[in-house]
Image (cartoon, rainbow, N blue to C red; front, top):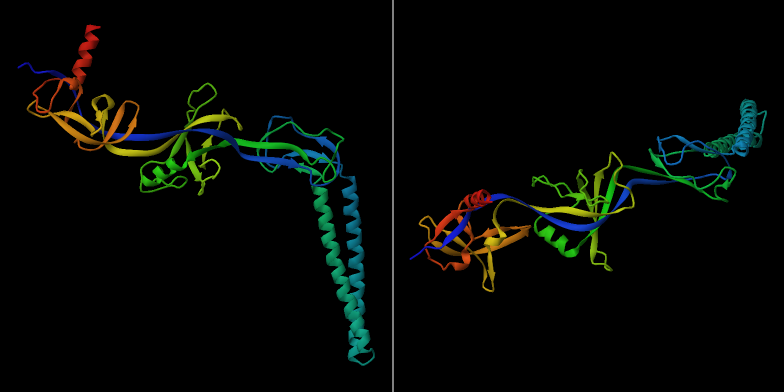
Length: 356
């Protein structure tokens, strides 16, 4: 009896990475609106639109004359109240010995003490008014609270800005690091929990972290990976999804805030899993099976339990052992217990290359 010829491969182990693909949106790590905190006419702009600015850099100047006058008035009032407080102290210092000598009444002493305490309270109020006036004067110089790239100005020189006018002057975007927002289905979340993948948290018990990769406008992959740092604890009832966020370095500012991108998230890693080619697996109503060639060249029909599939490979959870020989081509002419002639897949590939 002629033995059928089959092509076999040796069962191997390897780390199998399971990915999910989603639509994401990039946003800046920080996005700050620069607003006028005091009312006045915009006097100067001290930056070039669209350039990089430093933290604390002066951006705008609001006409400070009114606020300087208020500082001067508050300072003068403080000096007046201090003088009154000094006089009240001297009056009290004179009345007290006289009272002890019965040369002044209790009423005179009480009035002197009240005047002294009232004068001290007036000094405290004037000091607070002066501090408030100085803060308002400081707000006429508008500085950037962060470092980043600044937008175009939203107002022109001479415009009334502040509480009674336009308050938004410009925006500053810090995008050296960006955040990528995307949504996962509740089913994906459930599966990640079943695999003990705690999105948004580092886990010392595993050797990998749920990182993402994103695509650029030309569908090429951005070379730097990002790490998931947040997962919303509740599902949006309208969409049935929950929000996930990853943080990604953007040193060359290639990723632009606001753009949409394809997100590829590493959901799980099956470490040292049994992996076989998808073409070797036969799936029927009774389940999935594969032909294994024993050491005596006999083909054995082996039912297996499949795990996840990626590209042209499948993970086998149960039914196969590392190092066994499986049939990858020619299994359609086999019946269980049949003896076969084995051709190794690597030899078959080399023969085909030589024939070509």
